[in-house]
Image (cartoon, rainbow, N blue to C red; front, side, top):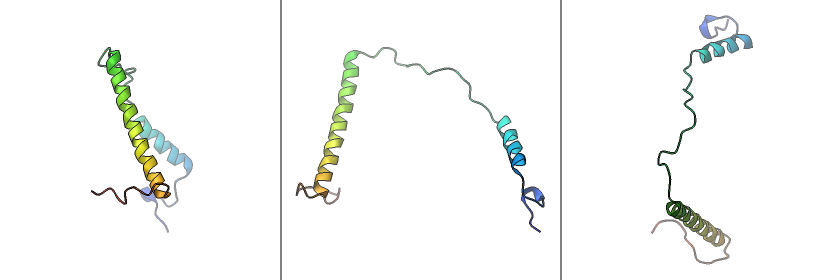
Amino acid sequence: MVSWLGGASAPPNILQINSGLAALMATTVQPANDGPIGMAAGHISGSRQAFGRAVVAFATLGFGLVVLLQILNATNVVPRGWENWRP
């Protein structure tokens, strides 16, 4: 004879499992709904926004350039490249 969880002689049916989950969910703590989180800094100047956008754009272009060089090196289009990333 097989003994299931809780010492029952038969496996639990789906209704028993669902009622157990419902009881568990009823006892969990729900997060408070404080509404959307506002911007803490208030107004950000246009020049600062432009600088941030430029930093992200240059970083993206740099990453794309490295990926392109690696692809060209792997396909032997460009004979120069890096075997590995060690100096």
